[in-house]
Image (cartoon, rainbow, N blue to C red):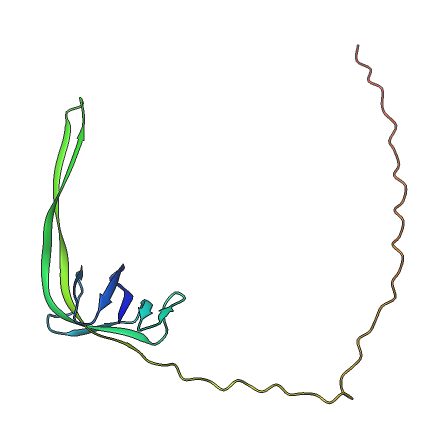
Length: 149
């Protein structure tokens, strides 16, 4: 069983007991978090949300907060003397998926339609077809002669 869930603005394919590195979450280490924005689930049959599955929840436990590997950003324009070197380390949170579950939504009873007796129903009014009106003849404007030489 797996699910595709949106965590901190990114989509992850997760399964039970899987460890995932996500963007830094605000919760403490050792605390439990739940994500309800589940986009797809596969538990023998595939369920796709529109855009999310109602009642589906992915629960996880925060293992640690850490920083990712350093990424070097180097910019250069040849023959111009322009060189800029920059680095970046992303703040990450390691989480372990504890479970994927779906709470079945309560089914509502469909409202029954009332059937009116035939006596109360009015017959539709049929209008007689009328011939379309003829358009009035167009008047043509007399052309003016120009006085230019």
